[in-house]
Length: 377
Image (cartoon, rainbow, N blue to C red):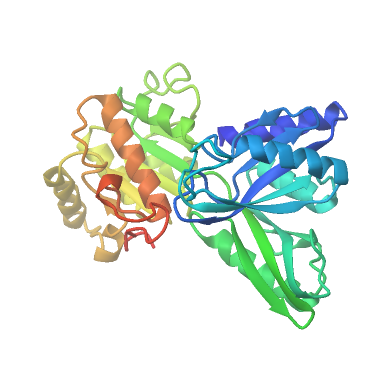
């Protein structure tokens, strides 16, 4: 999220200064490239660059291409094969291959709507024709699709537009949608279309404002999560302790009125108080949260499950599939900071559909044939 903010600020500054600028976007990745589809960087007319689209091995060349794009006003799709032994004779091969779409900054209404969506942290998608395979379609044609299916612009064919809208809406329903290039065909022709997808940032709701919640909230903020702290203890729920979080001071009796948990919310229960943890767990399981983590040993978690059953509030096996206990990746975490790293690593893995584990134990590209966690797919 911080990278997106830097890019948006750079775009605003370039526009305010009347500078021409180009945007480079990774639109296709094969193998283990450093960045993924949708990664962007800005290059202004003076050659200044904001953000990166690789680990440093593409930026110089992309900057040179951007100069030509700004001179001609015509976008290009540039292919880079990073699996070659030498890149520009400097031995910078990184593995994988990428296509980068480099275009003059577009101030049309479709792109403006897209930037407003990203800035407002809302769901939306921007479709761009990057290559015509056949027919009368037009390169660089654009269409913006809102989360409700409302559109601006056109790709040049009504049936293609309809298919694209359906595809975009399905994408936006996913927990962690990936931008991608896809071939669309209609009676008007066939084209490669890059769909840039944006959804609201993930939310982390932490029940408990103890000392160990502080590094968890801080790391979540750094990783782009909107964080909420829920605890009844006013002395613990303060801006000094949680400067980047939404603070909710309430007992369990106030959860229903004050705490909002949705389909992009991740929940961590860590009150260190059995009764409050039990009520927090029961409340979270009534929501659509895809992940609910209960801190502590499995014996303690089973005590909570039994207590709820004894109270006439049994948890179904289906509901319990969303609960993780103990939580965090098995890295031998001991301190609050290490435990927070372990938990955030698990949240990132769950969000992307990975099991976690050592990359050293994998064979082949790290971004394809990934070991998916069936509980999150």
